Amino acid sequence: MFNFEKFISAITEQNAEVLRSFFAPDAVIRWYDSNEQFTLTEYIRANCEYPGKWSAEIQRAEETKEGMVIVTRIFSKDFTTFACSFIKLIDGKITLLDEYYADYSTEIPKWRQKMNIGKPINN
Image (cartoon, rainbow, N blue to C red):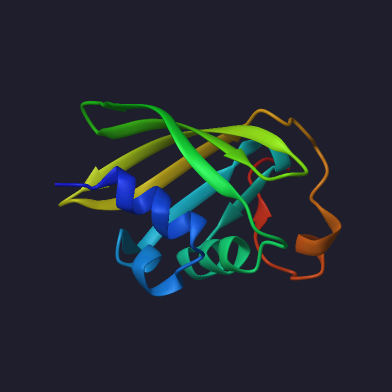
């Protein structure tokens, strides 16, 4: 069984080892608002090197035929946003993670551009 609360906790704690355990090795992760597609290693790096600290609060989690949908409030003293995560699971592991953020932006943040990771979802 997929433990979505521990999954969100691993993201918030920036715990690369635990976060990796939720994914199939060849998982695909897509952030549509910034038009980025990541490998698992790139996704973990983007999350674990995200600047600053933040908290997360699960607003809603629903099982689907293929996996789960999770809506999460992400916040710190400086910002609040929401993430809607569409998760495809096979044998309890994430094989596809499509995420949409409420702070719509078509530009990749400068701090992540410097990482030189990911590739465009749509050209």
